[in-house]
Structures are given as C-alpha cells and as structure tokens.
Image 1: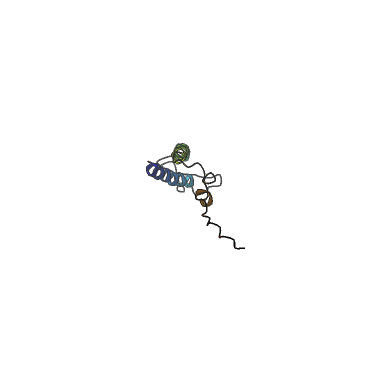
Image 2 (image 1 turned 90 degrees about the horizontal axis):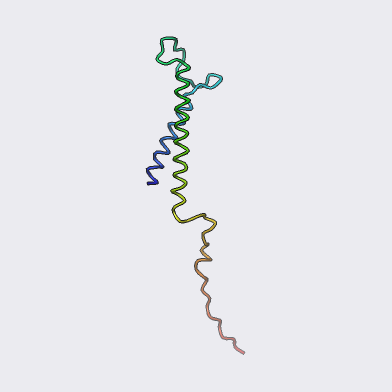
Length: 103
C-alpha cells in the first residue's frame, strides 16, 4: 500500500513542478509559447486560469498523499528513533565471576 501511494505521490510532485514551470511569472518567465495572437487555441487568460486551477488541484492531491504517507508510516509500530533502546540497554553486559583473592 505504501509503495502505491508513494508512486502516486512522486508522479503528482513531478506534474506539479512541470505545471508551475509552465506558468508565466510577473516578468514573463518560462511561459507557454511566445506570441500566439488572436487565432491561438487558448487565450493567455484562459491558459493562466487552466494552469492555476491545475496547480491548485495537484497541490491538494500532493497534500492528501503526504498525509496518507505520514499515517501509513505512523502505523509501523516504532514511534521515534529516540524512543528505541540502545544496544547497551537491550542486552546487559556479561560479567565474569571475580577471581579468588589470595592472602
């Protein structure tokens, strides 16, 4: 289950990076194409709205998969690496019997 959710999470993360890079920034950035006039398939405003909506949906899916992965990781039984006993605490050290004292 964790592997499936992690795979989906990584695909969403990659898609989110791509969609964010396609958007125009205030200064022009890496925006979609250059020049497309009135005869283009989508207007600049329509493309911006589509990319903004896609970014919001992908971000929401990213948050959901992050929370699901955190819940799945929490169900493994170990709470924290700090809470785990150290090897010295797990097995007591063997002590050899004291040698007889000669007088």
